[in-house]
Image (cartoon, rainbow, N blue to C red):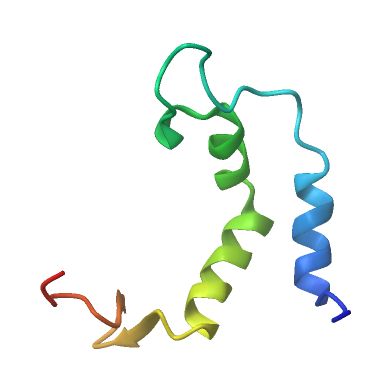
Length: 77
């Protein structure tokens, strides 16, 4: 099994401190944008940095002309 990087360990330790939060409302269609758990996670600097690094290192975003953008920005989907 691959060893986690130090930044992954830090991010996971922070996530392990998440308080009890909802991730959906019973009887309603799931909406990620209404998840208290996802909101809390996204507000944590360690996790936000890990997500950014993952996108950058995976080649999904690049730095061009002083700005970060998706590599397929402007393409039709």
